[in-house]
Structures are given as C-alpha cells and as structure tokens.
Image (cartoon, rainbow, N blue to C red; front, top):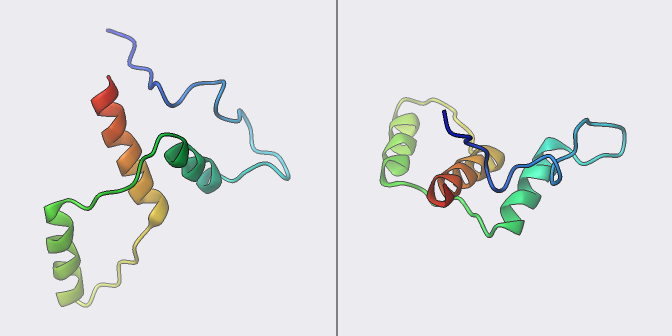
Length: 80
C-alpha cells in the first residue's frame, strides 16, 4: 500500500504531546487551517441537514473545529 501521509500533517508541524501551556487541539487545527488557507465551505446538503434538524426540534450546534477538519481533509484529498 502506498504511503498516504498528509503534506500538512507531519511530525515537524504538530506537537507530539500536550503539556501545560501548550496549544490546545483546537488552536492547532485553527493554525493549520490558517497556514494552508483552508476554510470550511458548506456543501448543498449542509443546508438541507440544518433544515431537517431545525424542523425536528433537534438542537445541533455548529462546530467550528469540526468544520475546519472537514475543510482540511477536503484540501488534503486535492493535494494527494
């Protein structure tokens, strides 16, 4: 199997362990997104999913970090 390492996630750019005073996972993800010019772009089905959630009275809060991870993954697929 071919090596599927991500060009944006390597041992030199990510902290190996969390320690007191080190950036949080959310801060690291925000920094990766900024560094690579990645922003989450909602897909057409995202609006549909939001409407279905609203109509079902489900409370599904938006998650900035999850959205950035989706954007980073989509960008990674384009770079491979």
